[in-house]
Image (cartoon, rainbow, N blue to C red):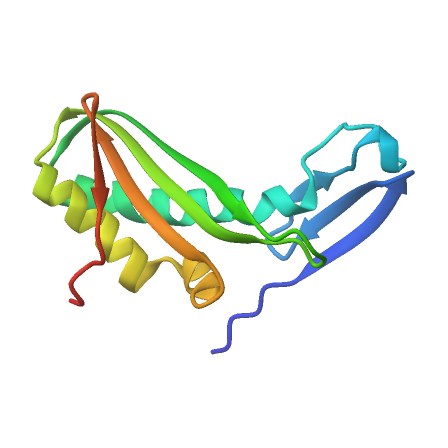
Length: 152
């Protein structure tokens, strides 16, 4: 059975748009006032970061829970660090940082992140070859940069 994701975009007003997903949820987008918007919603260029954070974040926490790690708090931060100057402007490099507290084995945390980035996260797979990713974790206040993962 083929899985199809579909989005319908509707012009709401000025530069505000409503995108309704195939699952029936609506995401609003807008632009800055200097280009005709009201700054009432996320910019379209921010949404891939939202998708990346959600995709890799859900993967990694699911894996950590299966590993029976005692995660007390968990956040994923995605940040563009190098953007092209000319149109179409896009991010050439992106940092993905997992902020975790709890009784978590650093090796298991790194494994969970690496499984997401190499095997499970479809959003990062779409960007592969276009964007250079840098992955980090901050475990109980200690920040570690992950190098290139071993292929599993």
